[in-house]
Length: 135
Image (tube, rainbow, N blue to C red):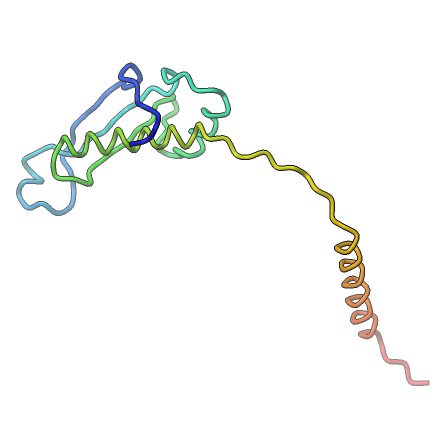
């Protein structure tokens, strides 16, 4: 599980749905898939983390600020519930990670010389494409 625990206060709703896919008649009888709704504002995320979570979640984030996770990978309710909570915690943990600041650097003298040489050689190739004049 991710380092960030999922607070119970943030969970709005946990609904069990009929799962799809293989499983025989059991899939028609038992509601094993889990739909987990999490109130993102109750998590108390920093603005950068909220923006990143919104970007990472994509269509799983509703307009009302709820994160919607559907887990139907396993055949039991308990396993799917655990899977949904782990995936939500992992997504929130990824949103809290900050990218390393990029330090701007300047090209060195040799790199500048290589660039100028490449430009000159390319210019010579293009100059040779002109009209041929017969004198």
